[in-house]
Image (cartoon, rainbow, N blue to C red):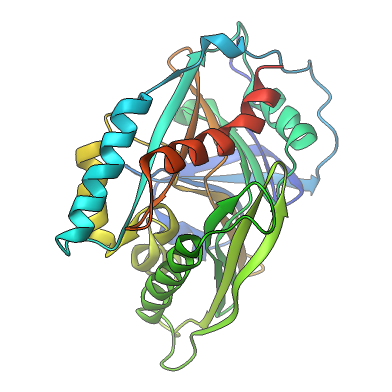
Amino acid sequence: MSAPAPLAVVGGRLATGLLDVTSDLGALDGPGFWAVIIPFEGAPTCARFEHVRLATPWPGPAWRGPPRSSWRSSLGQDNFCAGVDEIRAAIAEGDVYQVNLTRRLSAPAPPGADVAALGAALAAGNPAPYSAVVRVPTAGVHVASASPERFLRRSGRRVESRPIKGTAASADGFLAKDRAENVMIVDLVRNDLGRVCEYGSVSVPGLCEVEPHPGLFHLVSTVRGRLRADVGWPELVDATFPPGSVTGAPKLAALDVISKLEPVPRGPYCGAVGWVDGDAGEGDLNVAIRTLWLGAGEVHLGTGGGITWGSTPAGEWEETELKARRLLSVVSS
């Protein structure tokens, strides 16, 4: 059986007719419409497409997912909770202020699994403002994202990030630690953007705003700035990636803790997926949470949360369960 044709459903548009693929983010400052996948670890994939039109409902076979009982976690509850305790100990020592701890859920992929069908199932069962589907078989990319979070929106020299920190089952269910978590990451994002934006242009027009999403609520903030004239996509991504909301603060110290506690690479999860229109000078990349991908005969899903001094192991485990619950009900149906 031949590999399915490359495609991308990003920003409400369907892109087909693959022209070329590169790992060079500098290509995004040139012409063309690009689907962009930046994994948490490793090189990005920038795929340029010839044909772009409004997306329409998926015309292919419906997604048929693995049984709910077939999913396994890279970190069991005991190990995850031990990781929370270890992060709190590092916070007590002053090494970090916050660390995002995640785990990977995996299950055998059904025969003939197509990420485009998976993306259509997510769009119907878990609609999200920054959803994306990218299928580039020659590059090993089969990603479907139902992300609620914007990483970077660029329009000319204007740039915006909308970090999410704080998750609750109800609009009035947020804890003090949720707001503290959000403010810490807003400071980190302000500093990241300040590295590439004009002096004094970085602002926070929205702080800890409550947003409803399928099955839960989030605290969302908005950070904006104006890029310096010498900054392109490579410099912008270098200054801000990985997203602060899925790493922690300080970012480099948090990344060291993550590499120690998480037993498997994150892959596309917690990276960024989206689009860039080089001709229009615009682009929008999500933070690849609520994101699934196919690889090595399996379907994978990441789930996690930010750990602060106010966290409890049981509470953080339940937050990862809450975030995964709805997606698993869609993917395994």
